[in-house]
Length: 169
Image (tube, rainbow, N blue to C red; front, side, top):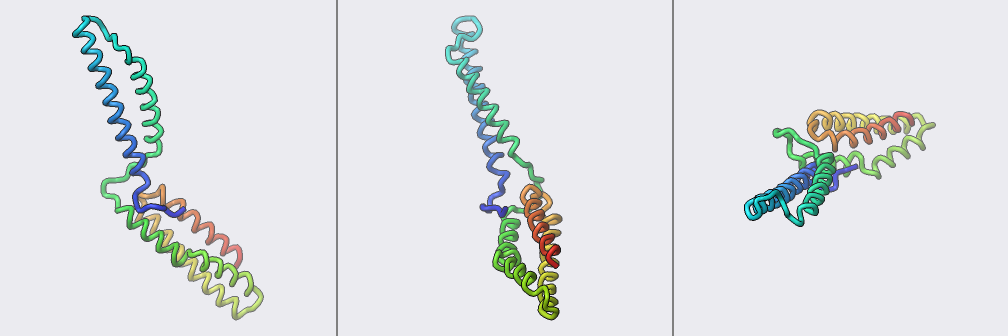
C-alpha cells in the first residue's frame, strides 16, 4: 500500500485529462475549419469527407477523457507537498512497521505467553509499538488530510495490524 513514487498519484490522470482536452479541441477546430471552408467554397453546409471519422474519434476521445477524469483527485491549493507524505510513510515502513520488527513482536507475544516476566517485557514492547503506531496514524489523518486517498488505506492497514496484536494479548 505504500506509494511507489514520490509523485502525487493524482497528477497523472489530471495531466491525461488536460491532454485529452487539448486533442479534443484540435479535433473541434478541424471540424469547424472544414465547415467554414465548405461554406465558403460551395456555399453549402459541410461536405467534409472525413467529418464522420473525426466525429467518431471525438467520441472516443471524450470517453477516454471521462475515464481519466474519474481517476483524477483535486487537491486544495494549499496542500502540502506529496513528497513529505511519501518520505514519512517510507520512513515508518523501514522502522516501526518493518516486517522483521512486526514478525519479531508477533513471535515474542506468541512464545512468551506463559512466562510472566518475559510476557510483561513482550507486552511492554507491544504497548510501545501500539502507541507509536497510533501516533503515526493520527498524524496521517490530521496532517495529511488532503491526501486521504493515499493515507486512509495506510491507516486502515496499520489499524488492522494493531487489532491483531490486541487480539494476541
